[in-house]
Amino acid sequence: MTTALCPGSFDPPTNGHVDVIERAIAAFERVVVSVVDNPSKESLFSIEERISLLEELFGGRAEIGSFSGLLVEYAAEVGADVVVKGLRTVDDYEYEMQMSQMNRSLSGMETVFMATKSDWSFISSSLVKEVAKLGGSIDGLVPSAVEKALQERLT
Ligand code: PNS
Image 1 (tube, protein in one colour):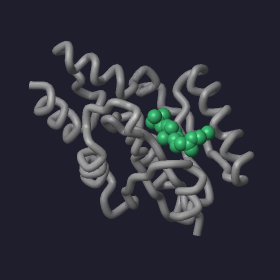
Image 2 (tube, rainbow, N blue to C red):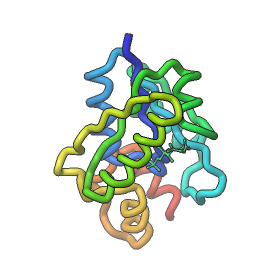
Image 3 (cartoon, rainbow, N blue to C red):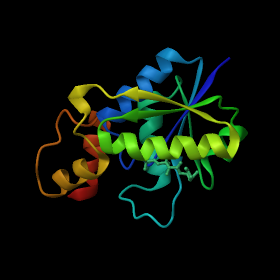
Image 4 (tube, helix red, strand yellow):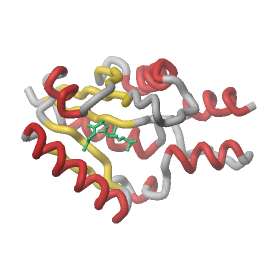
């Protein structure tokens, strides 16, 4: 059984994340989606809130968790064979390539890249939060549960 680990900040999950995770669920037998717990990074949603949103989106089809520390150590703990990451832009490519090479050097962990659908290539959690904070429409950029959570948090 091949297990894929989809790690991320997911603050909050966007349609870009959903696209990649849905495709990972279709491609791999077991998928673990995990929120990085990074106290030095300010977040809009708590770890528990992000886990709850991910459970609503993927519960029953993927295991949802959180982790702190090194990704490769967590990957070994959950029995992941590969890390799955989405690629949107050339900037993503450079950053993700560096991280995947570091992870392979640390533990031999392989990273599988999925090219994000072009519909979502301009979406990031940061931009979605900025637009929502400034009163712009995020309709169609995030799942409806996330849109509701953002509206509640920002009003
Ligand atoms: O959604 P993000 O913020 O792009 O996710 C980044 C993430 C969680 C994949 C990355 O920050 C990470 O792997 N953090 C764990 C710490 C670690 O292992 N660092 C070395 C990786 S080269």
